[in-house]
Image (cartoon, rainbow, N blue to C red; front, side):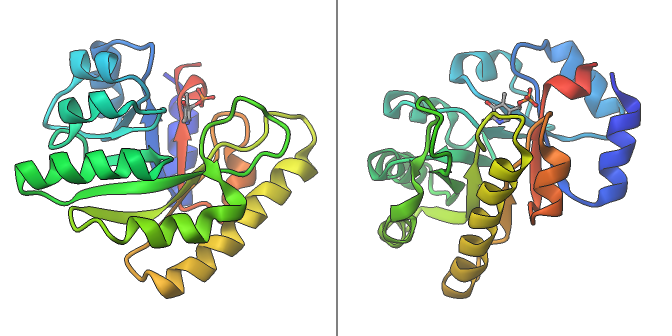
Length: 206
Ligand SMILES: *Cc1c(COP(=O)(O)O)cnc(C)c1O
C-alpha cells in the first residue's frame, strides 16, 4: 500500500473514495487498518462479494437499472447517476426500503473521449431540475471523469467548468456539498481546481 500517498491525502483534508475494484476484501481491510473507510466499487456483482456494513461504500461505475435493487440500502452513495431512468429506479427501490438514497449526478464533461459515461454537461441544469421530483433521492453533488490526456490545460479546463457549475448549482440546491473529480493520475490538479472529493484506486496500491 502507498502509505505516503494516503498520508498526503489526509493532510489535504479532501474526501477520499478508495477505489477497490479488482482488489480483494483483504486489501479493503488493509486500507481500513490504515485509516480509510470509504470504498468505491464500479461493478455490482464485485461489490456484493466484498460488502461489509462496517465500512461506507459508493458505487462509482455505470449502473444498470436492473441491478439497483441489490445495492440500495447497502451503499451510502451512488456517485454515477447519469439518467432520469436510473434515478427513477433508485427512487423506487429507496422508497420500498423507506430510506433516502444519496447520489451524485455524473456529468460527461469530456469533449473528446467517446466512451466516457455521464449526462451531457451542457444539459446538466435541466437534469438536476428533473432529479428534484424524486422524494427518496438526495442529490449531494456532481461527479465527472475528465479527459484522459497529458494536456493538463484540457483537464484543468474541464475541472474549472465543473467547479463553476457546482458553485452555481449549490445556490439553487443547498444540500449539494460534493464535487467528486480526480483519479490516480489527475487528483492533485482536481484538488487545485475545486474538488471536494477524489476517487483513487491504482495509485493507492503502488
Ligand atoms: C476506476 C475508477 C476510478 C479510480 O481510477 P484510478 O485511475 O485507478 O485511480 C475513479 N472513478 C471511477 C468512476 C472509476 O471507475
